[in-house]
Image (cartoon, rainbow, N blue to C red; front, side, top):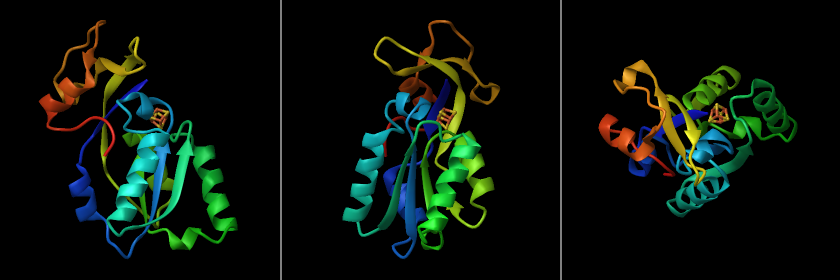
Length: 165
Ligand code: SF4
């Protein structure tokens, strides 16, 4: 599985998006959910509710099993178009890995896709269903290990975050 770290805080996020923006939150229900709940349904609903409470215009909440799947993203996009919602969305906040973000940037070229995650490498789920990093990518400066490294430690070392906004 993909081991994702969050790169920005909720306060950072609020500084990037505008109150006039139509916002979609797009959450991955697979690896990103296993990364301390960065993705998944709870993080999606909680972020939507926090942003609305802070006066932001969240118009869509998308939950997708694998948000890196081009055909799946394309089919949601077509649904937005058919429903007449496409032009009302300015910003997409991915609660997903950076690979999903790349796919979204390609398929939604006219939307701002928030850059909020980095892939630290590959990992496995531990006995609690939480991702541990076993095969870090070179940029992290970490060594591979079968025991794995817990993501909060990785995030602290790299100056990033884990879990939901
Ligand atoms: S979008 Fe990324 S985090 Fe979600 S299933 Fe695909 S690879 Fe895993």
